[in-house]
Amino acid sequence: AQRVTQPEKLLSVFKGAPVELKCNYSYSGSPELFWYVQYSRQRLQLLLRHISRESIKGFTADLNKGETSFHLKKPFAQEEDSAMYYCALSSYNTDKLIFGTGTRLQVFP
Amino acid sequence: GAGVSQSPSNKVTEKGKDVELRCDPISGHTALYWYRQSLGQGLEFLIYFQGNSAPDKSGLPSDRFSAERTGGSVSTLTIQRTQQEDSAVYLCASSLVSGSSDTQYFGPGTRLTVL
Image (cartoon, rainbow over all chains, first blue to last red; front, side, top):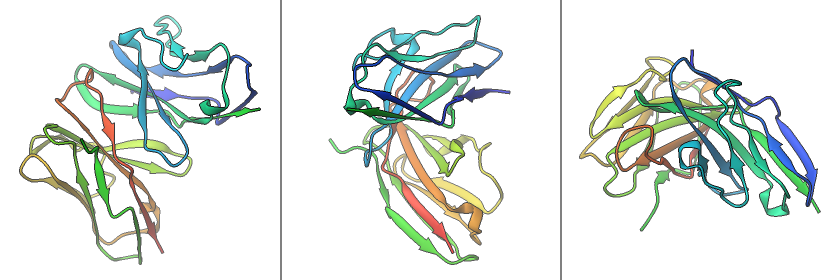
C-alpha cells in the first residue's frame, strides 16, 4: 500500500540552526514526492517537488530510493519558516496526493 | 486571478443533518480534488474529478458522502446524515490538467463541526 510517514509531529529549533524534516514512503513503483507547507492562517501550498531538483526558500529535498526517504533540509532556519510541513506522494497512474500526518516546525528567535 | 475558493468557510451542524460544501476551482483547471483534514489524521484523499467525471472515488469514507461537478467547474461535496466523526476541515484543490506532475492548488478549506 502507498503510505507516507512523517515521524515527528513537532520540531523545534533556534534561528540559524539546521533543520531536517523527515519523510519516508512506501510505494512499489516510481513515485513523485512533494513537500507542501501551510503557514499560519494561510492555505496549503506546494513548497517543492523532487522532480524539479530546485531549492525553494533555502529548502532542499533529495529523493533516496534506497532508503525510500525524501527528507526536507535547510542549513539555517529562519523564524518565518515556522509552519506545518506535509510530505506527499503521487505516481504516474494516481492523480491523488497521499499525505503524511505533517510536522510542525517552530523556529525560535 | 483568483485562487481556489470554498464556501462556507465554517459550518456548524447538528448530527443527522445534511450539509453541502462548495468548491470553485481556478478558471480553466480541468482536475479537481477533495481532501479531508482531521485532527491528528493529516490530509486524506476523498475524490477526484477530471472534467465532470470522477475516475477515483476511492477515498469517500461511506455512502453518506457524495460529490458532483457541473460544467467542468464548480463542485459540491454532500454529506448526508452527518455524524460527529465527520467533523474536519474539507479542502478542495484544482490543477490545470490531471497527472501527478501537475501542481495542485488548494483552497482555504471549509471547517465542518458536527454537534
